[in-house]
Length: 199
Image 1 (cartoon, rainbow, N blue to C red):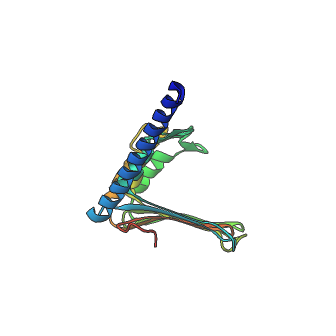
Image 2: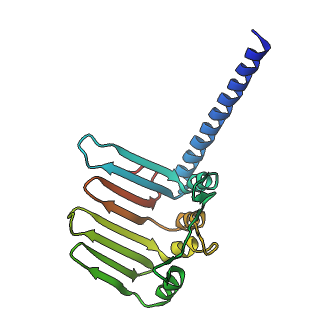
């Protein structure tokens, strides 16, 4: 065997060993999370098509945080999402949120039109957003976000959303339904609980 071939074999063996070690570490972390009562982040995406795919992601919060902090891709930079503009139509979202947070519980925005219904409310420490597309009866969005998670999202610089900080706060909470989106093509569900499966 030539020295070049031998070197390639050693490199491939090293990469394989590292991959196996990494997979073992993830498996061990998942098993430890299952027995330690750690919170799990679940994402389920189901295509409505009869032959449609079903994707389920079930990650211990510690692994979700580790994965996010290791990724740099487009707007996501190690757990921070960069946003170009935190104002929409001259509305400062952070100031609006600060006002909403300090106000009493209630329904703050209700929009009813020919095309859609939207409701934004604050209830028992949660920011609630409900939207329904009237043109497509099955198109619905439901977001129920704990206020301290929103605080964590806004904890960075004005042009950032701190996803890792939000996950860290979620890890300390009880079971929480976060997002449900349904339309004619997909159903998306995001939640946190102590189970290591999405069922």
